[in-house]
Amino acid sequence: MKRCANYLAGVGYATIFGFSFLVTKDALAALDPFELLFLRFGLAALAIGALALAGLVKLEYRGKPKADLALACLFQPLLYFAFETFGIKETSTSTAGILIGALPAAVAVLGALMLKERLSLRQAASLGLSIAGVALVAAWGAISGSGAERGDSPRGILLILGAVGSATFFNIYSRKSSRSYGPIETTFAMMLTGAIVFGAVALGRGAALGRLAGPEGLAARAASAWVGIAYLGLLSSVLAFFLVNFTLSRLMASQSVVFANLTTVVTVAAGVVLRGEAFGAVQAIGAAAIVLGVWGTNAAARRGRA
Image (tube, one colour):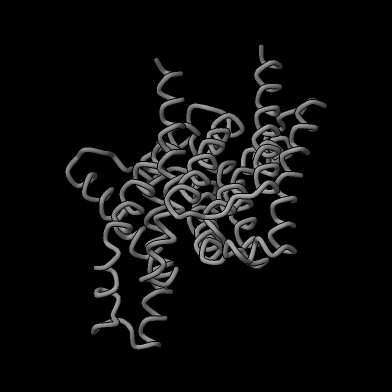
């Protein structure tokens, strides 16, 4: 039952995150990135705070080590979502999803360096294949006309790769902080950090541009994107990140993050089917290399444990 719960949690957060790329891209039509991040994490922090006040969840931070939790909050949501939100604005949904698919390989590499997890020759070869897939997608989008046709830019691809790096470090430090904090405590700390930092930036920019009130004010524009804000704030932030931290408290980082493969599949399918984004042979080859590389890495790991 515990194993089934772990896998269901992984499938759940991967599916929610998969659609979040599409929802984010739509919400950015009405809001700038910092405004969207502020509203997203502000709503999430309020939701968890209300649950805590109602006695439905327990938040306890006193007397516990803070360093690993603080680093987890730095990488996720601050750095990750700054990179991802600006990156999505300059890339297609399918390209962003494919590049995020390299996350499991990146976590496996960092886990070997920081958590002393040993990699076999087969695992190393599989990681190389996954990284090659990312390089192929990134290079093709930068030098070919197809990337421009889908809305990809070299800067957007670099920003998405920055998001992958930030998420990699988050997985490591969330795993470490799970020794002292429960999943809901880690999730609330992340949401509150995002709300405070992104809120300060968004309100400062809005005041400077005179966009805090009136027809062009934040409230008016947020009203036109409330469905996306609710999805990102409640499902993609509260529920999905609770499931992420839950799996990281039960599984090794390299095991938990493998569900990012499903995120890639959902994201690419949503971009192609719902937005009509182009998906050519080069992107298909790159996606296949990423998925095969990640599958090979984890299959070798399971065989080694057996």
